[in-house]
Image (cartoon, rainbow, N blue to C red; front, side, top):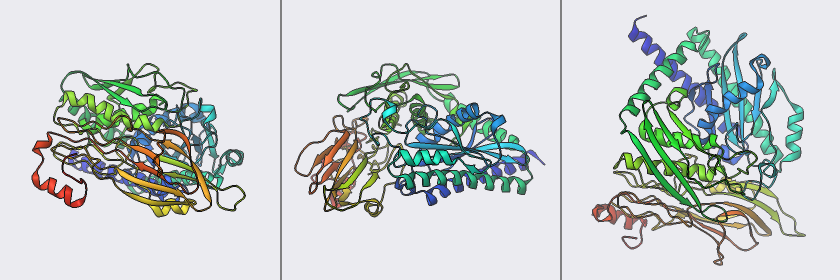
Length: 540
């Protein structure tokens, strides 16, 4: 086989491997019980070599799940031990520090054997609707209040499910059928990946993935290092203020380029909070690396070799929280980490970095119940919502788009089908995108009411209310968010709150910052903004 033929052969197998993990992820999407997985795609899937190094990831999924999972598999290998791994096994955890940052994410890892030989691992992660405790919110004072903790353990051994674990789950969660159903969906997802991998290896005549792994890692590492070598040398610091829980929180990042690596240090960020807005370093690292890859190597496949040159350091603080800190809403500040890091990179690479956007998802968890002495339905409903992205050099920002998480929006019909709520309004928010040569993306306006005869408590998971997304290169800031009842009562950005029967919860999601001098915006673009209702009176 000539070198050129081998190159083509290896590339074809690499593409086949990616199709294997994409089918793995689609299995989870099609079989999941929770709307956050089935409708929003809040999941990840990947294949790993026998050393636990990620070979390929599914296109479907979020950076927070994929990049934490890349590290989590190593914890599974260490704690289970290779001598205790058998064909048909599946391992599970929701440990925030060894998984993906909070208890609501379930990570499952399955060894893949070809005969008696361990050839790799499949892993997947999904957000489940409930894990008990206080529910999905920031009010807990420690991780012990936030739900059931599942240490790294076996969900199944040699194909036999751990019935005691399933019984324990059912006794500790509010939506037991959904949660247990998602556990089985996760396990099935890995099984599909394993079956497709073995079929591929038998078709091609592979006994191991060693040569293919070496091909993948060699090329992606070389390509990533070439991009890093083209960066300016130095260090740049950025600060971002956020709403926090009961007081503003300051986040700080310093990006430093070195020979062969780029490091992000979070020294200067505020200390750990007593509320559940802290972030384990595994999740902070996931989104910091994602931000750097978006700029430095966006077209290079995501795997162990392309991630390794990007490193993270931090003292103990809100972005490097230690056990047993409460971490339920770790995604809020985790999703703001890319804007924090990109703000530092903008100093090194002027003219190349988009403006700040909404960042964190405006998730809402509703606990709906009938009024006292009335019949009705109880339900736990999780809804994902997105504000606007920042404008980009040369392009307007995307409206109502989940950057950096990448999850999809949940259809109104799917949310209303889950429980007794009525969504009266879900539309783009005019005048919310920051003005500039390129306009920031628009946020949304959403109105939610309990169905007749019902009321609900909800967990607010919002940010960018007190501090709007900032414009870049002369662009104007996006509009800050607002949470209120329809009678004008202002609500807190985070924490459990109440919506009585007959009242509506009204959410105004933030818009993205603008990019460039507004005076340079094209006249036709301004006319189109007015025509489409994106702005109501010209400049903001």
